[in-house]
Length: 240
Image 1 (cartoon, rainbow, N blue to C red):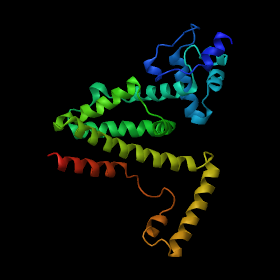
Image 2 (image 1 turned 90 degrees about the vertical axis):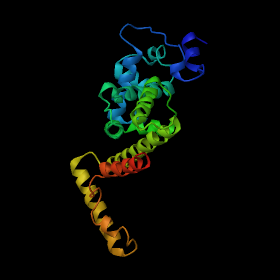
Image 3 (image 1 turned 30 degrees about the vertical axis):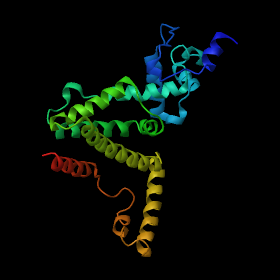
Image 4 (image 1 turned 90 degrees about the horizontal axis):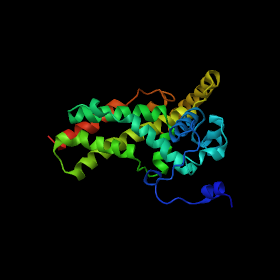
């Protein structure tokens, strides 16, 4: 077995951030450039399009040249998610007021999730422990600090807001994926779905959602802010 195939077949132990297995072999190729290429590819073609071979083709290099920087596709996916997490940290821009801070983090999380919907797939399928991800979690708890609650209660509050935000992103991203990207096809698709929803509303089988069905596909106003306000109102009542 050649050294290159051995490095490919060996099963690394522990998450990518806990290992020191980076072996730079090209001056023009870095782990950072590989991860950025994978992010760009996922943004364009979706997460299923990302592989060591496809990223190498994107960069114009041989697939083997990537293994000195990233040991496997699983590591690459973890590094992609952690890079996005680093871009979402507010740092000094985090408001001092707990409510404003949670609103700012939730909106940043929402915007990034909708810009990179594949990141939600990674969040659902893989545990994330990267350094940037931990910085994000630390910032969530820092946002709650003015409430002077225990670490456990701060975690409960932060995860409640984050879970709400991720759920919203999941729903909106699914709606967007359903609609064809071609404008003409999108118009035909939406018209067909709206006709179907109107027929279901008129059937009498769904009396409680019939008024909503008549609004048509995605016809209802965006409710992220109102839902977030309800959640924060509840937190505020519980922690005056």
